[in-house]
Length: 346
View 1 (cartoon, one colour):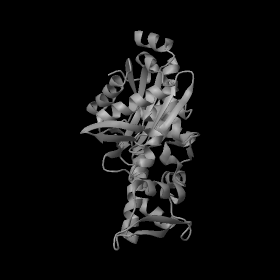
View 2 (cartoon, rainbow, N blue to C red):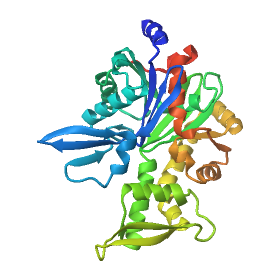
View 3 (tube, rainbow, N blue to C red):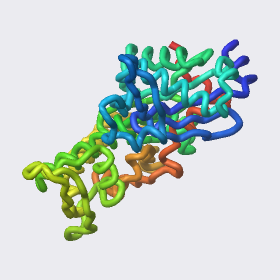
């Protein structure tokens, strides 16, 4: 209990949704104070690699850097791929969330969200990165629980609730009741996989090589989870022609992109159906009434709710503020004593 006594008295406590695509920081009594891309630009000079910029300043550099600068994402599939860079990124975000007052950083107690399918080694890497970045104490919370709390679901009651959190690297599917997880599954499919499939489809059909940023822009503009009637919307896409080697522009249709996204969307739907098959019957009865709640950036893909509703026959709703639900839920978990039991200490 000493942890919570200290935790309750510290003004700079924070909850961090350390995402593959974006990092969102919630500070006690202030709410969401930071939401930036999980991107770090590294500059190499005299054989030494240093952090140049982080977050909003680093993302526009992706795919456009000279030889001595590298823009990377230190997380892949929801877990840390480069721990040294992740520590630098976390330190930057923690300082920025506190208004740049680094002298306060040592007073921070931190809650970090982790995928339910992450291993003990992956969780320790996240814990170590936060500790080395300046956190006094680190607690973890499963993303699905945090998402449900952030979406306003009554997870403390003896009533089943189902949440599907579609992030950049992973999709978390969970059935919750009494502040616990009755069933959870994590599949490594999310926004990144969708971008890869769009890029691959354009390369295959149009002989055009496009970068990550362009593929993401196509997904956000005309991406959809179910095929439209006819070709749907049309968008111009620029890249490098693989035949001539010259810059070129092609027109892609909404129907093409829906076809490209069919595989990752199908994997997400399959994970939801598998969860329903494993859910105890009493909780299944509750889900019929409560429906399925979608959170995360992937939930904003057009007609994603329709695709899941069609496959399951259940009502599906997209949570308000789906992008920040996980961080909001993690923040409420350390502010409200009713949720302290969901925090992982080991």
